[in-house]
Image (cartoon, rainbow, N blue to C red; front, side, top):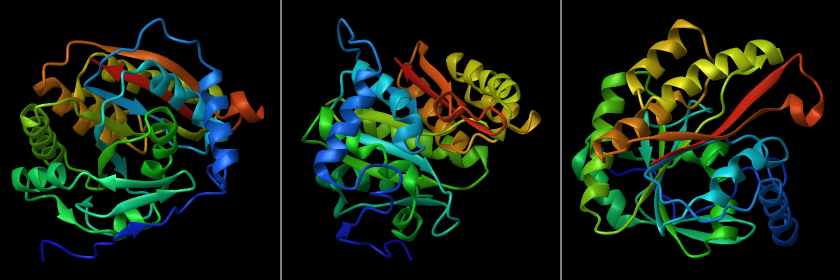
Length: 277
């Protein structure tokens, strides 16, 4: 069944927990995250990016390093992992809106339909997205810094490189044909719940492959070195698409851990913001 479990408005799942639950406090929180980064001399056009997705109090300043530096387009494809285990392994929303305390954001239906025509792996399914935080926490940054935009949410949960290839190629074809800029965001944290030294080492192994624009080697090192990078499937897919679109360089904008915020360096989570141009 190709189209299923659609919803007109997806309510916020983590407002008041991962980020502030009122418009005023959330706007202030986003502004504070942005303020923790230098003001760029000029905004940079980009093809893709990796952005973290923990609570804004932990990783918001890292995500903001990208959002503040990038020349943000009006259309996005946002790829996220599936933390909940619910729903289709490549779940897309093709219509409706997502809600945060800052208002509603419309799904880019023409873009979603074009993607589904290019890859039959993608299926309409809101179950994978209903409680998933990793995409939702990106929206307040775009709402505050950009205002009016549309996006396609894709939740990826299949541990298969060939699926990343098919979906990545589909994204590249659709973006190339769009006639206007479309940003491709991969939502991912890095290594989870090991000590600071171990996490920084494992994080760097993954970061290095993203910086080399090498999706296959990223996949390999994540498996070989047991790096608990929750969004390595979205990141791999983004890199495949970006390379097909002519990406030449990736830059690490910021790297930090949860220990830098709460002072507990025994069990940390790593976060990185990386831009692909």
